[in-house]
Image (cartoon, rainbow, N blue to C red; front, side, top):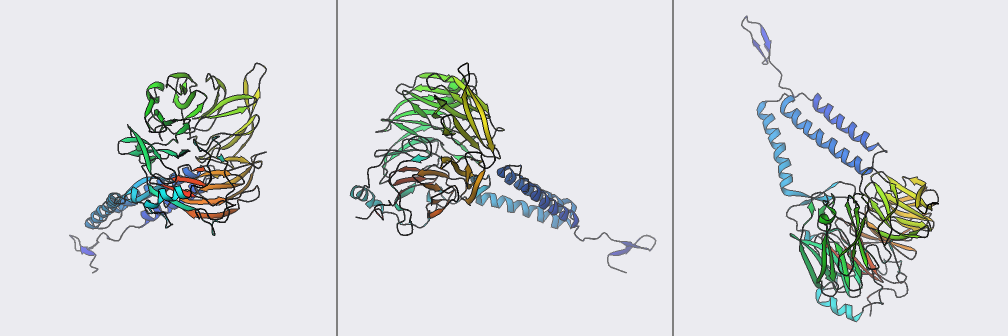
Length: 540
């Protein structure tokens, strides 16, 4: 008699229950996950980020289903089922204990790092750095050409275009020179450079800082601290907006809604306002991120309040309210002053709505619906005397509007074209050579300005930032490389790459002459770029 058999009361054999593992439910789960992920990845109508989130969700659900199968349906012995289930939980718990999620990539994939790793000691690419003791001496010995100011987000005109001496194109022979590299507090702010001050925002524990550094040496000149902290697992830690410098005043908006006016010389507070109290709003999901705009004697910020408190203007000298207007919830873009249809106007890319405001009164001049509630970040780009292009990510794309005066003296936006060829998630884009150049879901693309048709799409740089200098584009890739390109409507023409960071690089760059300041949420770096007419920089 087979040992799996035994005799019943009448002496007949009875088959014992088999202990063989029941594999078919596990196979169904695995095949189901593979099919689900495949279907999600093939859904071209879904935003790339949604496909990533959907794929992750399918894998997590599949993993949970396999755990339940093993515990309840695998038909193994009770001891092995318990050991396997507990072992899986311990493995997941151990991984969570050893690693943390330090935010997400631009494609919403989680970034894991060891919990014992100090953000301030994040390893950087191996490049030559001037020793600390030599920084100030080198700066005074070789200060380089006189540099124009980079006083606000995206440059002097808030359009990603800067004037600079012609840059060298050969970084193999004359690579950028690292003047200094040092830790910096968490934030997604960029630098504003005016004279001998480079100003940015940082987080330090429970305090939000505005800090000023000497651009050529990296020496901290002063800091201003306020009790405020913004932090989420996905969005990260710290303030988001780049300060604006006008004259001897700095205007900066913290992630929790604190608007400061500080003295450029020493960081002394001149006045302060609280947007959450004055607009009766909570900070947006990713924190307040719009850089203040200064027009004449007004500083203008996006608050996102209802009842005519979406856009707020304050007196630059006293901080007293000047006007408030609009009722659109805030997103993450910054206000910009443009002239369209012979009318000066402040354009604001809000949640679900584009609004244009009169610069002196805030009155809404025109509105246009937009998107499906996804974040709006990229600043709108004028492309003619009466036309403007908007773009956002998450599968939305771009649209070109023509602003026409109406007989009753109002302004009316009329769509010219809409295109999925440029989905600017949070990297700003440039109008140039009758084309738009920008990052479409992390890939550099060129779109024909006439009809929104894609000319080319090439180069996976991730969700970084870019500046145009003459006929070149200086691009910071999301993974930390600095890239030099000479794009045309026919090709991207990458010229050179230079490793700067080894971590997520979202912060906007600041370029003043040949001096480039870059930062992440962990480190700041100053580079001196080679100029076309002087060969290697830094030589005596």
